[in-house]
Amino acid sequence: MNVTQKTFIGWSLALLPLVCTACFMFVFIGAGDGDSTSVLKNVSENALLNKLLISIAFVSFSLVIISLVMYSREISADSDNPFLGNFTALVFLLTGAINLSGGNFFSAAISMYDTVPGDAILAFVIGSVEFGANDILFGIGFITLGRAIRDVNNKLEPAILLNIISFGALIIGVVHIVNVFIANDNVGLISWLGWVLISLLLGISIIRSKETS
Image 1: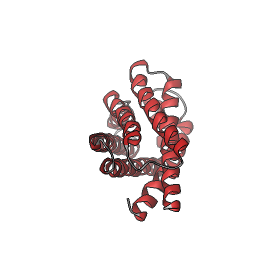
Image 2 (image 1 turned 180 degrees about the horizontal axis):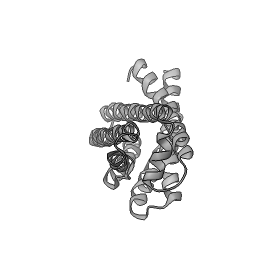
Image 3 (image 1 turned 45 degrees about the vertical axis):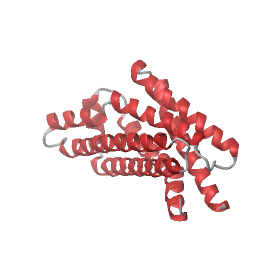
Image 4 (image 1 turned 90 degrees about the horizontal axis):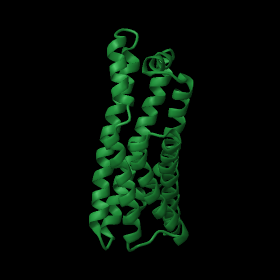
């Protein structure tokens, strides 16, 4: 992995999950509780700002996915079991495409609400609903990422950070899958904050390896 790749992947993973989370929090805390109709109505009252924040959130998430794909492909080349890294890259690529599609529906719903509210609500539900299959894929991606990191030959430094990232990714992957079947708000929060934390730590480790290389 060259310096340019390390810089892009490291800083994307270290910063963009936080940007994505902050944007979503601002939009949905402002929208308040309620059903899809009331939430979309509240979001659409400040359509321009919320569309901007949603766009930033989904672009940030897409760049995180790109970074995870690139990183997974890189470690597969140095692994005793390259299948895991390549498989992880494909899984993350698929989940990123599905999430970006959901973001487009979400943004379209905000734009359409004032003119065709019925279609807007349908688009909002499609764009914001929890896709169980995609959440399972996201969880599988983190499980295989954790395993691929353990198998890679050129270990991340320091070793304790490698262990935290590897085992943390495995745990968070399982939590993502479990959350699909129990649909608990607390578990959902843990799964979200978990992938953000693991991505941040992975980004920091890549940045540190760049500085010491």
